Image (cartoon, rainbow, N blue to C red; front, side, top):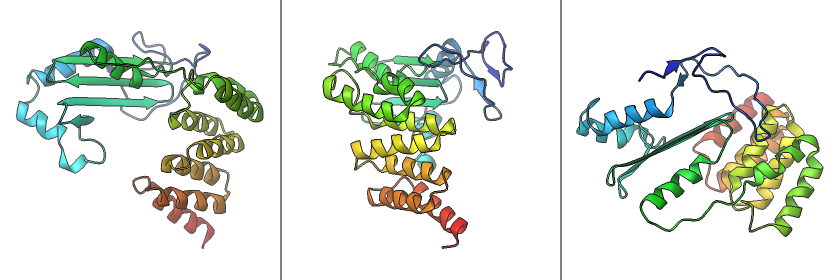
Length: 261
């Protein structure tokens, strides 16, 4: 693996910068310590080394794929779908996005890396279906990308644009995916636009009233805005809808310590 490096400095020859959907370069962020930068060729070498048992034995690989101590995290090497004999590992950080699908039965490896959130999740599974000769659907346009700029400039106009597109172009954009609005809400939250992010998360919970994760996100926005009563209400709603793997409960405890209630 000759094109992989830990924590490369800005300007490093093989270091990719990220861009937003307007092709504007993102500001450099300090990532977690030990961040590994790897290109597609080296990532394939790593996956191939695991598949061919050059790195570890077949039995050890199966142990990691089915790690009983990391069930909630999907195993030690991403998620393993035993019925399909398929390994999937994906991740998102700021504008970087990645996925690989490792089909053991059909000896297919698909790797997609993006530096401006190009919906590699959808594309990876579509490519897999195409290679297997299965039916597939071209993904709809991202509603997040369509309304992002409007929301950044004027959140109220952004809401109007959202409903206008939903009324006139529902079959063209991805209105069925709650992650689109959730992503937009968190982008506004990272920018310090707390009230705007609350507006987006409220829009999301109205559109998807049974989605626990969205109420969890709304609770986080309220918490950042120190609107503790509203945050508690949102987290409790998330729990009533099935919970968020204990996060809502932890946040409720945190709020109760802050408020003394």
